[in-house]
Image 1 (cartoon, rainbow, N blue to C red):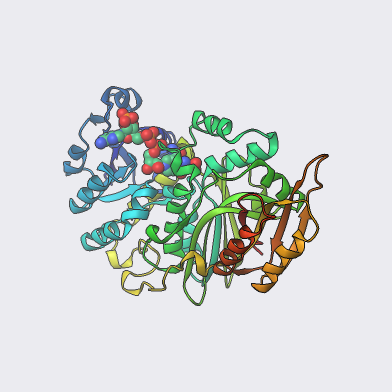
Image 2 (image 1 turned 30 degrees about the vertical axis):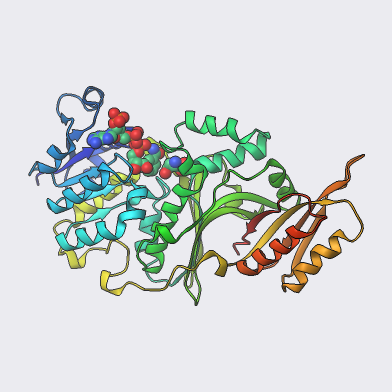
Length: 436
Ligand code: NDP
Ligand code: HSE
């Protein structure tokens, strides 16, 4: 049978890895797919560099639209990134009847509804395994492996840059900015690293996982997003003393009122496997009714790990492209006419537990006032830690762990505590997840 012909749009980090792995493992991939898969055309702004990667047998062009216009190309792989030209090219490829593979989580989290609808109308596939947690086959697991289950929640370390920063800060006591520079030099960070450190990249990814897990439309605009830029080294240290690690988690939970969709730093018990995921590695926990809790771990970024996921999608499309579109796995796991309209809950309605750190005057009665406010709000305390005031110091740090309460109550209690004359600085609040 004639090989499937692939056109690559963008041959940077992921594109070059895809080309390399596809060539290296061509024979095994063909045995799995049932026919050859060949990159026959590449578009990149830097034509000379692209030619030096792919050699003389592959046509290289500077204009991506020439790839889309080529009637011999069966699958277009978008590896440019961003929501600008990448969105136009993906929609044009779909309109031209091409199947699309993309690693672009930003594009799908923001414009997924439009893109999946266009693909559905045209009867083509849009595959995006590489968009979440790089080489970990988490999309396949959620969409197919766990298809018997009612998924209850998922929580993941899905941004390698921030996990690397938190690990280095904890292990080596390094400062945030120094570690960020290292992460950029190592190629983990996005073109705009604020997407990593402000939690946006993780929110793109958890938005996609949430849609597949619960059969809801992609709704990035409703996600609560908080990054790691306000975290202080002392919080990492206090968390450690209390038996926790701080991780940036992407969390989505099903509740009776709606779906929680949030990214923020989180205290996680140090004994959980996920708390021990270090460096740029990723991991996702999924809790579902039949299977219980499962954990997926691996490299969430990098040229070949991400290429591994891109090629898995190419093989899937090669196997399925002649199938009736109605018999293919739906883009978001659930049939498009069977999507749920459960709302995404505002953060004020989320129920979780908390770590609070307060800089307080070292005076009698301070603890009683603080705990009195929490008691009035019906917020139960789990643990209290007070740093011994240093010699000559008139203030100290008070750390409180709470049990679960609704965020709106905590917001109110924090506002009241902040008014106390004995609370000397803005209160630090970090959410806590037991993940059991
Ligand atoms: P790179 O920046 O390394 O590669 C993008 C390539 O696209 C560059 O070669 C760029 O050329 C080229 N390009 C830009 N505009 C155009 C255009 N209009 N036409 C053709 N080519 C163009 O990005 P990555 O490979 O790192 O990322 C690609 C996608 O994969 C992104 O969506 C990213 O979020 C996602 N991703 C990346 C991971 C990673 O580990 N890097 C992991 C998971 C997902 P030039 O350099 O000349 O501008
Ligand atoms: N910037 C991303 C990360 C790359 O650090 O995880 C992979 O999506």
